[in-house]
Each structure stands twice: as structure tokens, then as C-alpha cells.
Length: 513
Image (cartoon, rainbow, N blue to C red; front, side):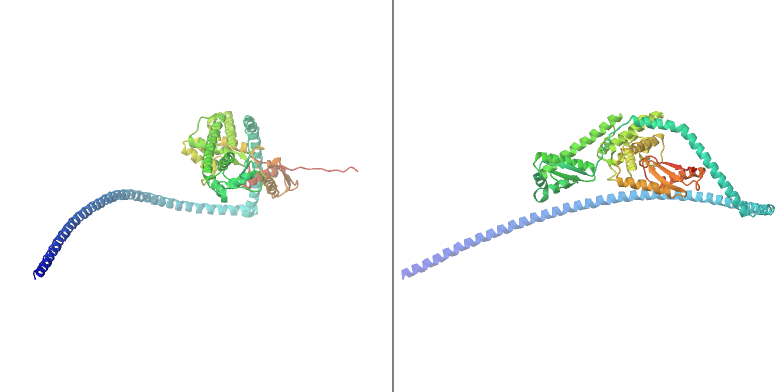
């Protein structure tokens, strides 16, 4: 019995111990949960405070921005208001001035109307007197007014035309006697003392290769080298069946020269890939820029002129790579500078100004492919931008008569330009263009009444017109020469001048039997 009681007591004691253990563990869990809740509450309050502070900062910034915008708009509105008031004041003054002028004009109109009425009355009286006089003259002469007028007009026209032609001929002969000799002396001396080499250029450049295998390396894998080269230079690289050669094609001679130098460097180096292409193109550009600068400096030294501003100097050098009708523009500009300087010296004008204007007269051709307008006007604007003298600017913009000449230097530069371009060998011309120009010269002359035959000779510098003796008199032959020359001047464009000679001859033929 006792052992049973002992067992029961042990069980009760064990249960009590287990209860106490779990009770302690539960209390610890409650304490832990309470701590966690307190900690979460504190963190929540901290986050709440931070959010409130950030909101206050954003509100302050937004308010500041709104205030700044308001101030700016207020200032802008005040400025606009002042400008508006100023405009209104100006408008009021203009309206007042217009009103005054209108009153003045109205007063003048009233006076003019009064004068017109007086004049009209007098004209009516004069017309009555004139009509009465005409009727008396018609009764006395026996012919009508229209017949008398026609007869008188025909007679006066024939006499005036003949007298005018005789007078014109006398004036021309006198001017030629006095001026032709001196003009020839000035021009011939200028040409003889000036000489320049002229080179022809095209839109393609050929580059030699050491062997045909190099073509594959230039093309690259799937054409990447040739595409990159064309994109870097702006020049088309043509690879065809031509042995050991490739062709560079492009209208811009400067870019074509850069491409040529870069390609030759790549071929010599043998290592061809996009990065190397970019490196060689960059070096080629530097070389060409230096070449352009040297060409401009050499031109200045050759014509003995002081330095130019950098922009003008660089564009002058670019003319080394520009041609016009096969004539190198830089060489042509040097020649024009010498001719203009020599002619100016002969006429006691400033030779250095004339040379500078002559050297720069075609400067617009260096940039006319990139800007709209004629090279003369573009060049004048470039010179004006670089603060050249007005006399030089006028010589540049007027050498093709697009602007009126304001000084003798402009006329000298125009003459020098015509001489340089017109002399034989200076400019190339295709056979087809040459033949078309000759035919047009002859057709213009053949279109006149009384012309029998026309011959264009001396490479189109002279036109000889043979007329029918029965249809054209000696006096009308002079008029015919002037009319043909005037038509050629209107319908054709040509360098220099064209001489028109009208030939009228009388032939007497007899036969001995």
C-alpha cells in the first residue's frame, strides 16, 4: 500500500514539476513577445518621424521652387509689360507722324488738283489752236497730216540713223587710235611678265598596288575594310579587273587626295583593318592640311603679299585641289594677282591692293560646294567676315558683274581674270563643246538678213561674215556688225571677246575672147 502511495506521490510531484517548467517557459515567451512588440513600436515611430521629416523637406523644396517660378514669371511679365508700353508709345508716335504726313499729302494733292485744272484748261486752248493750225497747213500743202508725218519721220529716221552711224564710227576710230595702243601695251606687258603652270584634274585618282593579292586585303573580310575606308573618307573605292591598280572616285579633290595618301600608306604598311584605316586617314588629313597651308603661304610669297587671316589662308590653299575648265584655280589666282598688280602699276594705282584682290577673287570656289550661292558672292562674304578692305570685297563680288563695280581695281581684276582664263592652253575644252560653240556662232550670224556665209575662225575668237552686196550697203554693214556682236553677247557665254568682221566686196568680171 505504501508503494502505491509513493508512486502516486511521485506522479503528482512530476506533474507539478512539468507544470512549473512550462509555466516558466510561457512567461519567458510572453516577455520576449513584449520586447519584440516594444521594439517594433519604437522602429515604427522612428520610421514615421523620418517620413514626416522627408515630407517636410520635400514640401519646403516644392514651395521654394514655386516661389522661384513665381518670381521669374513676375519679372518676365514686368519686362513684357515695359516692352509693350514702349511699343505702344512708339506706335503712338508713328501714328501721329503718319497723320501729319497725311495732312501734308492731302494739302499737296489739293494744290496739285488745282494746278491740273488750270493746266487742263490751257491744254484745251492749245489743242484748239493746234488743230486749227493743222487744218490750215493741210489746206495750203494739199496733203493730209498723217501723210506729212510719215514722210517727215521716214526722212528724219534715215538721216538720223546714217548720221548716228557715221558719228559712232568716228568716235570708235578716235577712241581706238587714242586708247587701243596704250591698252595693248598694258595688257601685253602684264601677260609677258607673268607666267604660271596649269594642271588638269579629274574626278578620279588611280592608286598602284604591288600585286593583285593586295586587292583582297583592301576589300577585307566580307568587304568590311572597303566599307570602313569609304565611310571614313567619303570617297568611293573602285576595284575592278585593272591589274595592280584601284581607282578613287569623288567630286571633292581634297577628300580624294586624303583618300589617296591614306590608301598608299595602308598599302605600304600592309596591315589593313578598320582601326588602322582610321589612323592612316587621320594622318593623311594632317598631311593634306599642312600641304594646303604651305600652298597658300607659297602663293603669298610668290606674289609678295603680307600674311592672310587663318580662315582666308586655309581656303586659299584649298584652291590647290580645285580646277575650273581644267585650269588649276590656285595657279589661276596667282596669275590674276600678277596681271592685276602689273596693270594697276601701269595705271598708277595701288599694285598691292590689286594683287590681293586678284589672289582672292576666286576664294569662294574653296567652299561653294557646301554653301548656296555663286562663288563670287560667297568669296566676298568670306572676305567681309575676315575684315578685308571694301575695295577688295567689291573686286571679288563684281568680277562676274553680279554686283556693280565701285573702283578701278574691280575692273582691273575682272580684266585680269578674263585674260588668264582666255589665253590659249589655260583651260581645257572638249571637242564636242568646241564644235557646238563654233556652230552656234555661225548660226547666230546666218540668221541676219543679207548674210551669205559665216566663218568662225581663230578658235571662236573671230567671226567673219560675208554679205550680199546688193542687199547690204557700206553703212548698213557697220550696223550689221554691231547687231551681230550684240546678239552673240546676249545668247552666248565665253571668256574674253569675239571680233565680228562684216565683209562686203564688189567684183567686176570681164572675159577676153
